[in-house]
Image (cartoon, rainbow, N blue to C red; front, top):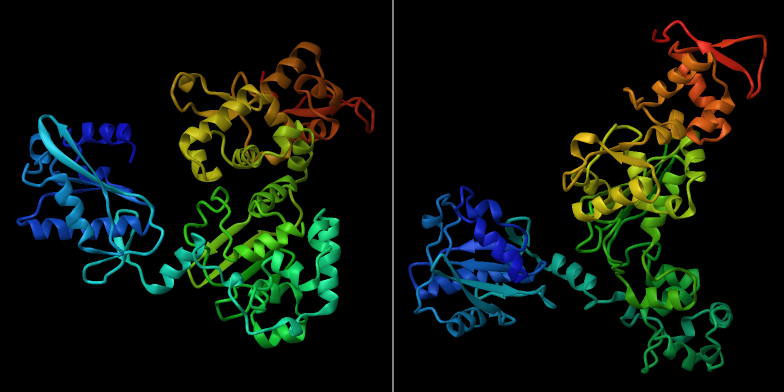
Length: 497
């Protein structure tokens, strides 16, 4: 934890708030135990838990249950030197952990902050027990999960490991196709090499002549693949099948194995790309068969929203992952509205998610939007500010405009432009209805062209708006004209007088 952030937390300890309430996935508070051995064991256990997750800090000398500051800040005796604390942790962990140890004086009380970064290899305590911090708990960290974490951190790459196949098992047709793809990708200097040299340059064949799993997947024919890698259609280290359910209502894809360590349904949209099989990913990127930057999820969200549908739903129960994409026809009014947005806004997945969210609820603020776009509240506030100031799609409510995180709503013009895509209608003197009512009161009627000018919308959005006003009895058709943008509409039975 950064020194400034830790200082801010320590200023709060005991000020009516127990330290336990301030603990997180990267912060814990401990008291000095009855003996040196017990204290060092306590620290070693906590730091193993942190280093196997995201890293973290243990503040020694704080009672995490006390709500009075004097009772909470218990302190660390001077007999516990910083070097002794480091050695105590080092001797009780495997592989040994050398933590960062800093003393801090708060209200004259000596505390010690002991920190570790995210680890490279899994660690265990003196008893051989490995744990991992999830939320505020230290949970068992079994070998299967350790392997997943090492895969996510790039320490294990199944695709770079040697397969049971040799050069003779590769398809000459696929090798020739590989050479053509290299030329098309501008990698002529590799394509001009001999077969073996070309494959070695791409690390698809090891120097000893063995074919890597990546080479096998890219260059073997189906007969060899079925024999050597029966599960070559998905996660290569997990048994089971990929199930696809396709109906008019939805497309559901269920695949064996959980998400890569660190990726969850709640951060999948924003988590950095974490390929399970890095060599295979690099080879595919070199051949320009796919992107390496991990934009698939971002694109899936964006394109589902652009066709007027809800974004995909991802479910992970650690033994399988299920992705559900809504079927049917998307909301055509929303599609038209997005199509008329500036390109910068219409391609921004955060803007699209915000607009989609506001189709069903009248207001939103940064803390609520943060969960929708999977970003911190501060970044969510930046999205809302940009949508209000740069794109003129939103406006802060009068009562909250001066708050750090104001409440935002769609501008009247945006509601009108989205028309039937919005499941509610704003009321009030600054609402869409009121503008139409005021115009009719002044001129006696309104037309489709009038609404286009009033709200800067296209003909279809104006048509939808007129249909809605007629359905609610606010307007009704007047005159003998049968159709067209020049048809006039006057006060209906529900028109306010």
